[in-house]
Image 1 (tube, rainbow, N blue to C red):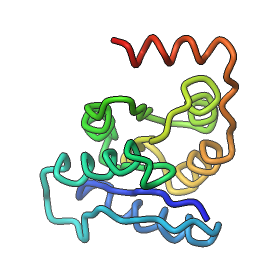
Image 2 (image 1 turned 90 degrees about the vertical axis):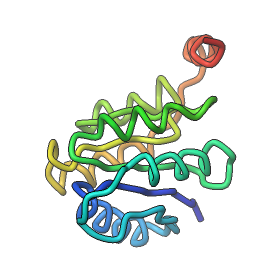
Image 3 (image 1 turned 60 degrees about the vertical axis):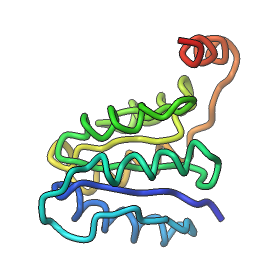
Length: 144
């Protein structure tokens, strides 16, 4: 069974809860790093620990959700050797895995509807890293 770390800010909380249910229905065991409601929070306190867990190999994947998803992606990418991609549609989600081997995605709850978010997550989780020329590029990213 896959283990996905998941975290959000207050704007992303409702979508996070829907995504947890969706992941469970697909046999995933999501690990929730918070938050537990819609009261405003400082999202780095929740996003960074989720990203560290994935980077350490303790979770297979990670999903972070905010209003736009921008800040969440920025925080997650502070973790070395880790690639979090901000996704807004199915094609961008697929490419995040196929070309960048992204192990986390960030979604803006105010940018997509629930159906789109579920499709983004499914496309990303089922895509396969293509390797080849992309390996060299990932190595260059990690060496910067």
